[in-house]
Each structure stands twice: as C-alpha cells, then as structure tokens.
Image (tube, rainbow, N blue to C red; front, side, top):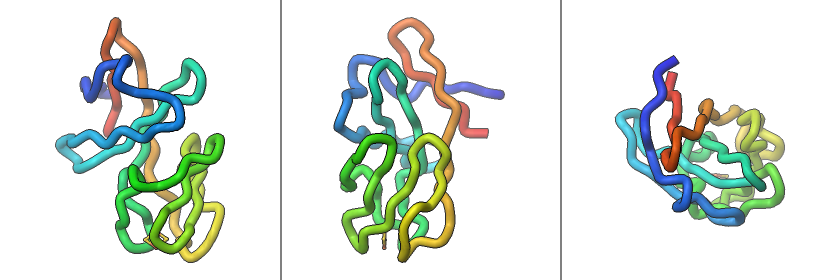
Length: 102
Ligand code: FES
C-alpha cells in the first residue's frame, strides 16, 4: 500500500463532500462520525462529479440521473448506473488524511 496526503482532517466535514485533485484524478472525501471515507469522484453512469451529489447516511446520490452508491464499498445500489465506483483506503496521520490509490 502507498498512502498519499490528500487533505487536512479538519477540512473533511460531515454531510459535506470535499473534492481533491490527485494523480489519479479527482477523489471525493467525506466524514461519517470519526471515520473519513474516500471514493471515486465520478459517477459510473456518465461521469458526473459525485461531490455535487447528496449524502444519505453511507450512500451518495448522483444529482444528474439519481444513481445511488454505497460509499463504504463502492457498490452501485440504484440505476441508471450499473457499475460500482472505486473506494480507497484511508488512514489518518496526525492532522493529515492519507489515501491509498492502489
Ligand atoms: S451521471 Fe450519475 S446517474 Fe447519470
């Protein structure tokens, strides 16, 4: 695994999605309680950025056509998307959010 700093812990807030640019493209960060989650910032249906989406517990809803994904597993939960999205391991190092892009 190779973790890279992508943000400060303080910048990732509950009920918000933070988009960050990385060497693999944009990824999305959010917080559920003390846990920070990282996922692909592009809907698998037609690439709409998911940081424009709506959070619903551990799910994100794409604002364009309503596809829904589990942001812990990446699993697609609602059409029109049929493919999962990527999710990435996260660890906290001091004040930094570190993500493994694989
Ligand atoms: S682009 Fe996300 S549901 Fe169509």
